[in-house]
Image 1 (cartoon, one colour):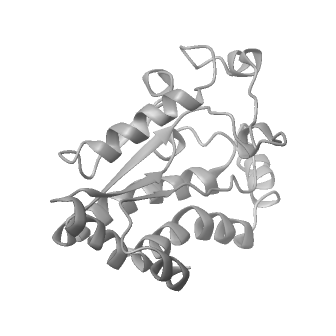
Image 2 (image 1 turned 180 degrees about the vertical axis):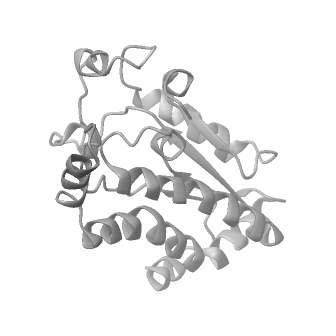
Length: 206
């Protein structure tokens, strides 16, 4: 990937690390330890946890690291701290509710911390690293499907069924784009986690 990009471009101004998988699910709603063990241990695996972590955390790290020379060149071309990395984490990485997928929430918590680490360590290269922590947005992961334009839909009633989304709907493409533009353009913002969650974290313990 690096060799192909470097052969076509002299620099990169913006990297968005957005890939993610939700992992295996085990619902922690039992009142007895033996039942809780069965629901979690029997429905999750070491391999599933590793796959989730590798996609949601490890891949973010190595994708960013391999592009550091092109990102630094972006700053050199456009001014101090202008090159930007935006990591898509999740409100799930900030809350205390497992939502039935411990591995995903733990991995997204790792993504949040990774953002902070990369921000601190890469500022010497004049590269900013921030993160967007989305709430419920339409995607192939949340809606389980997409159309021919790779667009997904999350109906309002599906969001309202969850009972903890003050806005009562999923976020929109425009609302995500506004967050991206803010973090990409404002070179005075570095190392921040921006929750764009419709107020969920005001309701769910975090």
